[in-house]
Every structure is written in structure tokens, then in C-alpha cells.
Image 1: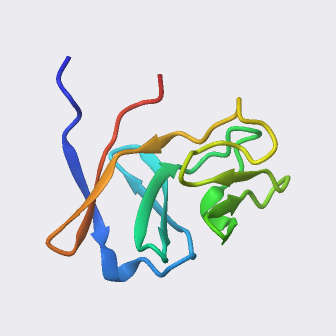
Image 2: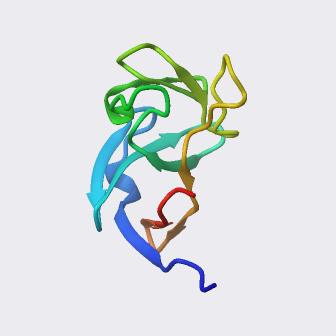
Length: 109
């Protein structure tokens, strides 16, 4: 099975730290999150696994994104819900190249 191609998302300078950014690319609705200390990026499905809330409209603090609908929180490093490890974000592999963020976009499952 071939791996998904890398898709160019945005310039890293256009993604402010701890300020989620919504993108729609090739039919995928994404939340892009830039964390500092250490400097890293996360690309996740923009739909909260609890009830479909808009994660890009959520808050980010201490490496955790919180959905604005019902305040479900997710550790970005593990993808796990902070109150139930069985609930996880759908995260996409991402990398930085020449000042741009890229991701491998594949449907969940």
C-alpha cells in the first residue's frame, strides 16, 4: 500500500504559537497548531472526536487543545483525551521543509 503524498499546507510564519488555525485542503478540514518550548507543529482533523466541535476555534494551553463546545481536552503530543485515553484525535504526520508545513493527509481508519 503506497504511503500518502506530502501536501503543502502553509508557511510556518503564518501559524502563530498556541493559536489554532483552520485549513481546508483537498477536502480535509484541518486544525494546525503550533506549540513552543520545544517548537513543534501538529495537524489534526478539525472535528472533535466527542461531538464534532471545531477544534481550530478552541484554546491551546500547555500542549493541550480544548474543544469550545463541551470543553473536552486533548494532549497534542499523544492525541489522547485528558479524561479518557480511549478517545483520541486523528493526527496527521507533518514536517517542515523550506519554511512550509507539509502533512500526509489520509482518511481516518
